[in-house]
Amino acid sequence: MLPELHPGPAEALLFDWDGTLVDSQYANYRAMADVLAPHGVTLRQEWFDARTGLSSADLIRALAEEGKEGGAGPDLPVEELVAARDLLFLANADRIEVHREVAEVVHAHHGTLPMAVASGGARLIIETTMRHLPYQGLFTALVTRDEVRRGKPAPDIFLRAADALAVPPARCLVYEDSDEGIEAARAAGMAVIDVRPVTRRSR
Image (tube, rainbow, N blue to C red):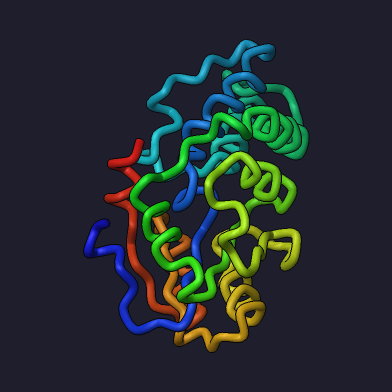
């Protein structure tokens, strides 16, 4: 166990799905490469690295914009690319990597504190992926963009999770690995543990 990941005074733990719990950077990269290849677009690994600061959705939009301007981007609407990416993500659900260090925290506190997944991801993707991971049945609540009709960085996703756990936002501790997620959690009045160094080591 990593001491810096142990929660301090808190009544509930909240986790993002896309970055904190699973190594979805790799899964999304693989899926995006499959989506874009038929359009003559070859993704270089450095294009989809955490250091770029781009989420998969941001990358899709950037490539689509390139296409509109005559660049190397695909000639497809962003919505279609997102849908295709999600389908490929689901097809690879059984191969998504778990973040080992964060998994230890989740298992250590199962049954001692209520825990929720609060994510800007799609509910179907998270539910399907979770069936292949050791997290199944460990979370009291799951709140996604489908419930709030917004994606990260939206403080209301965290607030909805706190409400589902019947815990005041100020008593929630959020494990996050993105700038926007950390900002959103703090905007919701929650304490945050920055796990970016941990998730980088897991990859």
